Image 1 (cartoon, helix red, strand yellow):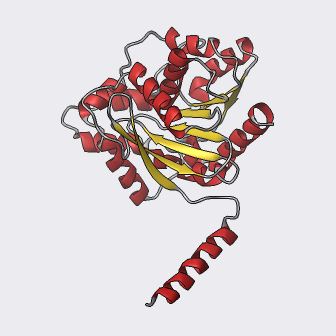
Image 2 (cartoon, rainbow, N blue to C red):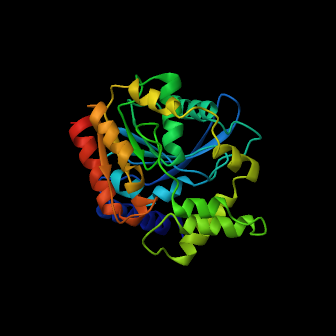
Image 3 (cartoon, rainbow, N blue to C red):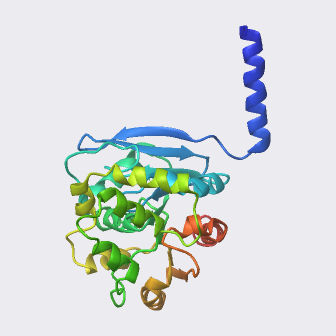
Length: 290
């Protein structure tokens, strides 16, 4: 193929992409270096006000793939791989809330732009609140906290699924137990290759780091203090397991909207992406970026 033919094909491809996705820029894989010298990865897609997504325990940023594609039609979406997860480096330490909160601060310093909305899911909820606890809310526009305890109201009772997973027999391999964990995040059946890829990503986090991430050594009130300290709008989207905390937040925090989704699993944004994305978009349009 000569250079002229190559250019013709290139511009035809670019024109087709613009016709199919006129308000969306293509995703880019980017990295930055934290203040303690760790290379962390993030996905950057779209233009406009920024949404920074922080995934859960051992999960990669690409688990938000549907949200990245949907929300980037209106916003700049940055999906973050925390240390030891996804395509980020695996350092020896830093698997505790204060360093993880600092990593989010380093990311915000790196990407620049206006104050973003921080969206944390599962462990990502705690990492986002650890950021707010240390750095305040002056550099964020709002919070979306998805399906984790935030220290409000009565502590949630462990689910039967969670108890079974924690009591896994020692002879069950780490790979087998992680497959069970990943499969249990969904109510809707997911393709086998998707579950296998997600399990492989989760197994990339070393056992010691995975253990440390499940045992943040701070009191339960630490997370509630972060919510009490911010006046920024908060959307708290949970499964019925956290109903009592959603009720408590609605009763005592006028800036918090608590929504309970039923018929979905822990990874609700995969089980019912249309409803989840609708909730987030509605919140952003009403409460954050009018």
